[in-house]
Length: 230
Image 1 (cartoon, rainbow, N blue to C red):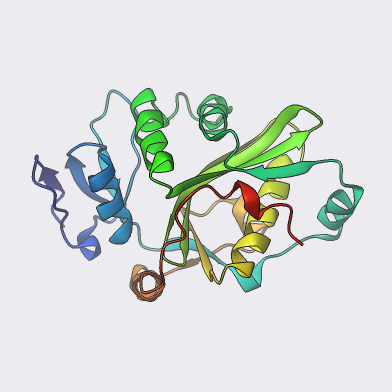
Image 2: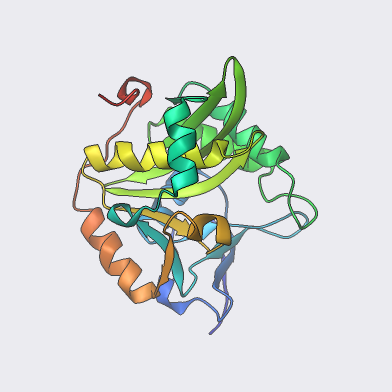
């Protein structure tokens, strides 16, 4: 399959035309309009400087069906200890910057300053959200992503304390279930997500779920009042 070169026109190729590696297109920009169109089409940006912006539509696609969340016995013990407290949308940029600084096996990070600016803009539009996990007054972990319809698109997570990111993820799943969501798009599988119940599905099946999810209204705005769960 060809990899499409984007220009200033606000358009993407068919997401089913992604390459074997999942790359669909190169170029364009990180404007809110383009990012929202990308998510609506099941496409997301993922690149590391000095590479240009790369747009992805992988097959298979890693997702978590919310009713398939796995909470191990040890994680239940962590949750019951109430060592951590969890908030939402109280420190969005701090969470994104913590994800930027999180250690990785590979060098560098795809969360550039331009990415931070772009997702801050989505947060201001009420469609990008953060989960903050606190140990006392210290930010111990968290994650952020984009919400459209009844689909939450996870972007990145970090943990400064053991299990903190899992606590944030589990709390997010429990919240989304109360709001009528069915799925989190995890993009690409890893063992951390797999331990929580995430699995690969085909791109075709993912897009079927996405099409259904976008028929629901988007829950825009600040989600800080949604926690703690009652």
